[in-house]
Each structure stands twice: as structure tokens, then as C-alpha cells.
Amino acid sequence: MKFSRLWPFASLKSQPFDSVKPIFVGRDSCLKWLSSLVFCLLTFANAEAPRVLPEILDSIPHETTHFTQGLSFDGKEIIETTGLYGKSGLYRRTLDGSVLDSARLEERYFGEGSVVLGDEIYYLTWKSRKAFIYGRKPFKKKGEFRIPTEGWGLTLWQDQLLMSNGSDELLQIAPGGFGVSGNIKVRDGRYSIKLLNELEVVGNILYANIWQTDLIAVIELPSGNVLRYIDFSKKAGEIRDRYPGVDVLNGIAYDGKNFWITGKLWPQIYKVKF
Ligand SMILES: [Ca+2]
Image 1: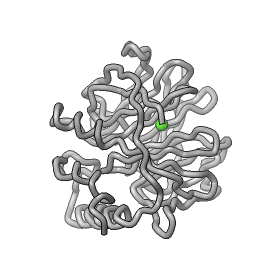
Image 2 (image 1 turned 90 degrees about the vertical axis):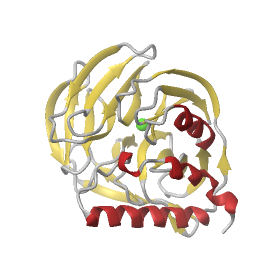
Image 3 (image 1 turned 135 degrees about the vertical axis):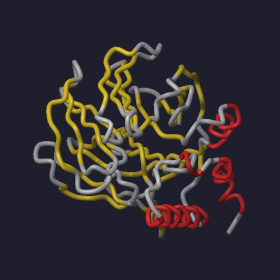
Image 4 (image 1 turned 90 degrees about the horizontal axis):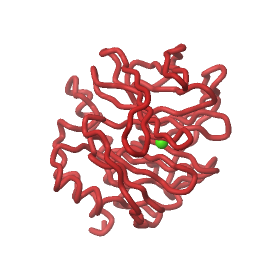
């Protein structure tokens, strides 16, 4: 085990464990989370794909009350969905920070990722086995559908929804029937890559945050092979040092030319070139 393989995880030491995604409801949940984290650490100790550094081009302000779970573009506007019970919401905002539309989830739902599809926006919940459908303009709840697992991240690939759920498996969901039509297992060489979170697709490449790390996996579709990792740990470390209340990196959006990256409660969204 080489030290250089583990160094991005130094950031974990500065993470308050009660600020991370699971709101622990019992010993079983805690043990499950710890075992996933240990598995993740061991996997990355042996990861094979190379790491590359991002080039940060610019930044814009981001609401520090937004526990970001989904980030994407609709034209020149950002669609953001947020989490936490009682604080989850859907937002349309401009790059200069003006909120053009918003909708809140009921307090019993913990919001997760989202994606724009046609005239609708799909918005996942974490543990309620439910996703909501909103009208795109204006935001108006139009319906809901059942999802078979926890919901984490959501994006669109070739007219199918791709959903992450914390495992190494991405579910392919047909938007019309909302049934699971397939799945893609994500691997780096011999190793399964778990804890895939917020997603973004460009062509046949999927970009996925790996929860509790500062890494974005660059994944080939449909094979699920990890091609490389974008290592955001330098900037994320600076943010954590300066703003101790922030949570993990989560949020990848593509504007047609560049990527925009943020995190839960982060004060900035970064325009980034990969
Ligand atoms: Ca996204």
C-alpha cells in the first residue's frame, strides 16, 4: 500500500463524522457506513486508473445553506437540488446568483440528485423510494414514481435516466415506464468503485463524485470502466480550512464547454476545465 495512493483521504480526518450524509438512525446504519468507507479506502489504496488535476478557471458565489445534491445546466441557468430533512428544495438560478424559481420538498423527504428531461425535472429522494416529477418552467409538481433503492445521483444518458445509489452499480431507468432496464457496474481494473454520488454525462463519458472523497471518477459508458480520476483535493482542502462548516464535494454540471463543481454548503461554485 503506497502512501501516495491514500493521500487525498487525509481530508477525511478533518471531516466531522456527524456532518456526512447518513443521519445515523442506529448502530446498523453506522456499521454499514463504516464498512463502506473502509471498503472504499482499501479499494483506492489499490486503484489503477491515473489521477489528473483540474484547472480552476473562475468561481461564482453559492448559497452556504444549500446542501447540494444535484447540479446541472438548463441552457445558461443552473438547476440545483438540495437535501436534508426540512431543507430540501429545487432551484433555478443564474450564474450571478439570482434565483428565478424554487420549490421545497415536504419536511419528511430528504432530497437528492436531479436531472432535466424535456419539459420536466426529475428529483430523487434519499430513502423514501420515491422520485418527484416537476414541470420545468415553472416548477410545479406533476407526479412521482417509485425507485427501487436509495436515490443518490441522477443524470441522463441516451434517453435513459442513470441513477446512483451509493453502490458500485448505476441503474438505467426508462423515463416512460420508470422501470429498471439495466445496470452498469463501475470498476477500476479489478476493483468495484462504490459510493458513486452526483453525476454528469457528456457524450459517452460519465463523471461521478465519489462520496467522502475529493475525487471525480471519469467513467466510460456503457462499459463502466474508470478511465481516470479528477483529483480536487487541493482546492477542497483549502475550502475546508477556510470554512470549517462545509461538507463534502458534491455537484458536477457541464455548460457545453466547461464543468462547474461545488459541494454541500460550499460558498462557491467553481468553473473548471478537466
Ligand atoms: Ca450533475
